[in-house]
Image (cartoon, rainbow, N blue to C red; front, top):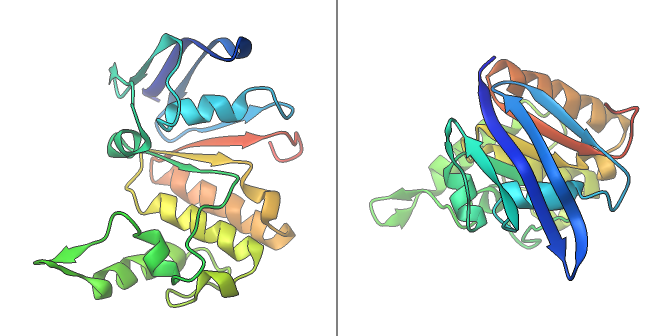
Length: 203
């Protein structure tokens, strides 16, 4: 498989404390890559660098054979990287479809295209089989269902790489099985998955 993402000698420190000390790895297109380590090992710091939240102190990254140095999450998403953070960042009083397209609304002429956003949301969630509806209000959902909204939002970006940071922390056993099935489907479509965990049994 062709290498899609490559990191070389990545360093990051906060107030003199080293979070990352010379991290290097490469990931191929359509590969599922697990990053495992105890809490505080730097896993989330590394993913935040990929997502454009942090900039590395040193080291280089390439994406699709080109230099990759996102200055913010918008630049990372524009290059095809989406991340599902552990901390939910949803709008509780909005519907599922409104959350999926918050900040990236679809337009028809100069008006919001609610019909298109609802249709795209339905396409995104229909394979999840976790009881979500496009018109559900987020504050009425279970914690596990809210986690699925976060995952669905990442999938609306036409991502080449989807980063899942401890994704099943809020999921029950059934939902975890559904997640692994979804990962296999994404892999079959050529989407690269980075799966962050501290649980060896998941890997």
